[in-house]
Image (cartoon, rainbow, N blue to C red; front, side):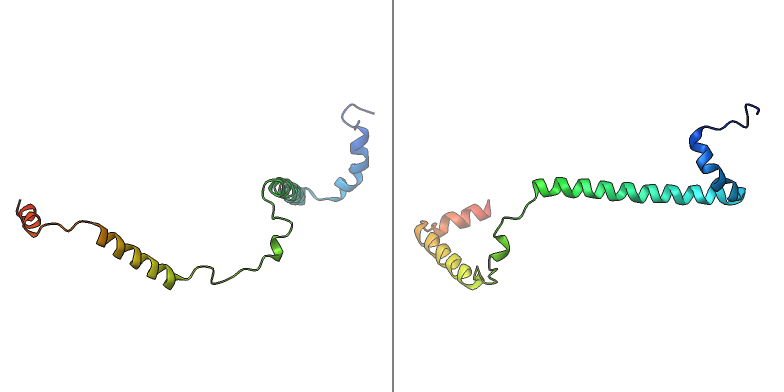
Length: 107
């Protein structure tokens, strides 16, 4: 046997399979193998990201039992309170003399 015909043990197992694949489709087979490897790598990365996210972003044990109330804040009552507060603040501020405000506007 010549040196060129000697193959390692691993390639002896694959040699019959590779011999049946025509030369023009070997590139396509390599492409599909690469796509499969990328897909598997994506799955592994997804599992790793999910594992890390679970460690950092966790829902509390009973959070799913909390009732979500749509009307926790009443906008109309907040608006009424704001108007009352503004009225009180306006009443507490000293009134400006009319002459001083017109003089400031003229300057």
